[in-house]
Picture 1 (cartoon, rainbow, N blue to C red):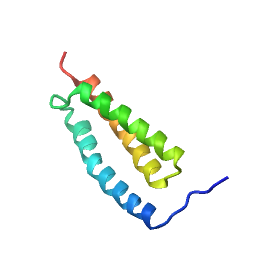
Picture 2 (tube, rainbow, N blue to C red):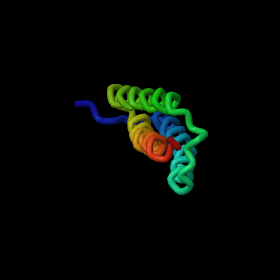
Picture 3 (cartoon, helix red, strand yellow):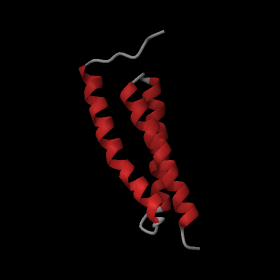
Length: 91
């Protein structure tokens, strides 16, 4: 069984993962606090969520710790945004 390898390429991926994931989390927090979801497009977020799921699966298949960590966190946070969009949308 092959273990995750951490080389300079994976370190670049980890840096990218931290930056992109950290950039996304404040939006989740702001949406949770304000409950303002009117500017979010539900179809776009569904496509985004499915895309992140596929990136996570890809990361698992290629054994990329950077992709697994970043996309695991982004799947959870984007799921929260989808939940907020559905819960807080004006009917």
